Length: 324
Image (cartoon, rainbow, N blue to C red):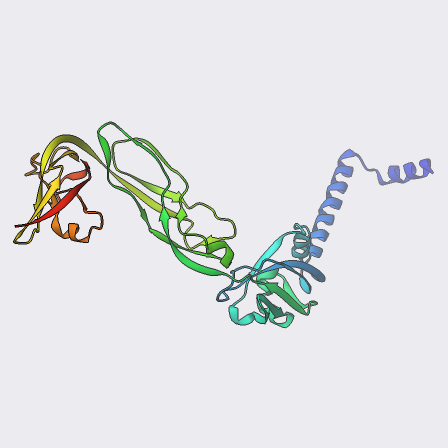
């Protein structure tokens, strides 16, 4: 038999180059055959795991379960091959209008397979034509969800260069956020915190974005907020000043004890035009009238331009009214 094939090959008179050409031609023909057949359209049963997304009032926007569907599809061999090579556990999120989701009971909703045809492009691919779905009805659960507006509390890890400070604190925009979740998850929430804002040796204004702290089972209208910190250079003044009284009605005298207080005052450097270091402290009779303890807060006579913060010691004094 070996000699038989040898005589055939010898009669064909093939040399090494001819064999290479023959193999290349066979490979090219096979490639053309493959490309031609892959370009033809075929029918196949394809599967998909669908998670429903829908804007149903009072419910979570995404179902907590998924539904498997099988559909008779038609597409090119290449598209069918690529789809079947995908991860079989991959889930597809399909957005349905709230009107398409029919209410069963409680937090359960369903959609008929006949309604799925409109969303076949989302489920499979626009290049895959769905002839029909084998599933009858898909049932989904959208948990009840409440919402409320909460203030944002920035968490700070900040240090300033010597004689620098913020004159307005940290400002976040927006200063509040709407949280969504099941009642037991959001009823106990009073504030939403940011992730730590870490800055050191601050001596100029800074700003940036910071993410909000993740809360399990709760989604938020904003994933992050913008913060800004205005930084100013200050100088410090310490002195002792007498405490005066204001708004005392005629025929009465308001006595305060002690009658003087220490004050530590920080103001912008360089000072604003017209700034003076003369300090005057007052107690307001109207505030004394509203006090249950007979103590009143000691304040500067009026807001002063350029003053960032001040501390009075003691901050409160005893007040006694004497009739004239």
